[in-house]
Image (cartoon, rainbow, N blue to C red; front, side):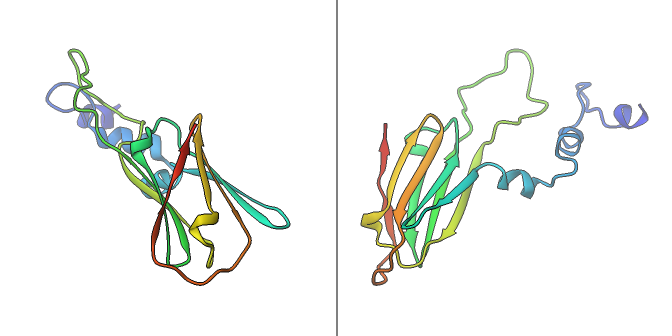
Length: 145
């Protein structure tokens, strides 16, 4: 109880760092950020499929990039300045605001052979196991169902 009393701000609310420590334990902020894009990778005889859960994003928030033998998924969620909390303030926010990315080594896969689709909060990337000549960095088009 002493900790709670000492960490109240002038409005009588607990300082945000208390909640950060409480909800993050035993995970660090870095660990939490890595959990933003939970991923499964499926390998078949001749293909790879990467399935990434990224719910709550609009199509403008998600980009897929291929270059330097890596496929990288970028997500960016801006803070909604229009969203207001009536007669109060956030004490703790668990919904992610900011930028995150995940990269996967894919070798010399031709970007024309990478299919990307996003439906119901899941991004699916499907491509054959193949080696083609190395190309420049390229952005992948996502099919928005």
